[in-house]
Image (cartoon, rainbow, N blue to C red; front, top):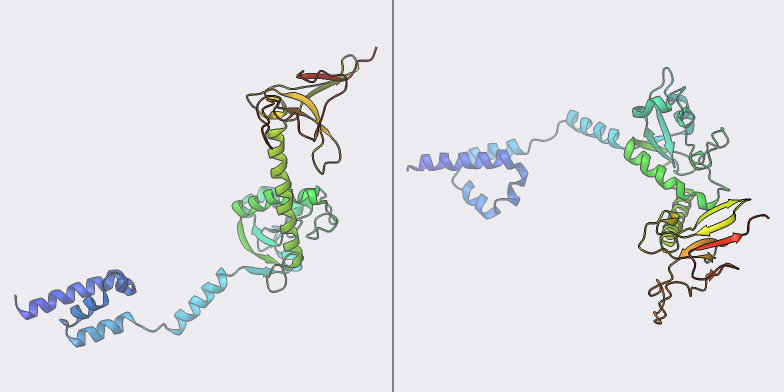
Length: 304
């Protein structure tokens, strides 16, 4: 094969690799191999090829990229702007709402959020507090959470997930949760901390309800009041029935009826071989005038 044919073949291979892989070619073909290939290609051709690959960006291209970058950045809204232009009424720019300072495009759910919809009072503002209090007045629809019972913060988590997964995130609202630079405020960090604490409490409560399920109960003048256990009481299906006990959980303000496992080793602590399950827990108390091993107990006798 002549040198001309070899040069042409090498050139064809080089151009093909460069066309398909571009700048990534160096991660596929070792640099020394590329140098070896280039040695077979006329210098004028290689100069043209490198110049073709490294074309400088034109001012128009640079401006286009800057504009695209700006469009991708989250927008910062003022409360006045969100309320004036984004409630979905005639002449508005869109249908947005804010939750915990994050602005979402809820136009996909316009039947609910547009004027006249069932939740139109949420549009054009951050009514975070109202999501858990149910107060949909102008005073209740606010991003200020002062005075809110800490046990209610867990309710925000579900709404956070709902909006983040259902609607398009647009930007941030300058207010209680984000400052004028779009940075999280101390109020947001405090709220997030309280949400986490509330979720931890709820998780512990669910675990506790599995360990000590609620009793079944009934009450009437003719029958009095009765509590009893079954293998499905408290909505917890299990392979044991248990016996009713007054359970006063640590930190709780009052006791409740719990079905307690009365066979096998304890859930917590050492197994002393007593085969009494969790009956020896210091938080359990027997009901008066009830058999300790009975799954049913009349707590208040019927009226005579």
